[in-house]
Image 1: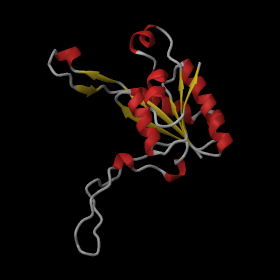
Image 2: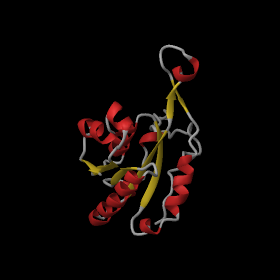
Image 3: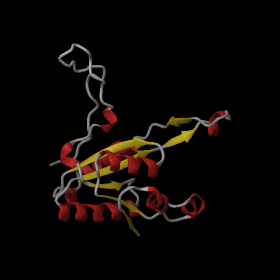
Length: 174
């Protein structure tokens, strides 16, 4: 099964009606996920060396458990205070074409041919978004690569923050 992104619903305003003629509340499309990937393995991926190692481990983990692989790329979000100097900080989405490039690279990768996988793009805090995807898919585990360098020392590593807050097992790959 080749990788794919979950498409947005074509008509987000469509509601189903029950027998009384009252429209049913519409489900949040963010929480609608492919049931084939429930209880899969979530892996954070940004194309770095540590995330490639995490992906390799997650592939093996998904194969051994017979589950799907949910590859998550968290796009950049920057506070507008960096640019506008306004208070309080408001976050804006920065166009991140890296997800498209990563998706094409993953689609051509032979090592992903043995496991069903999807690529999910999110924007925001990496730890929060990985845990949110894990919750939505009822993932058995989240796999991340370790953070090296000055950024990890100053702000704390993604793996460390995720380990403290996650509601499911977190596997950190060096």
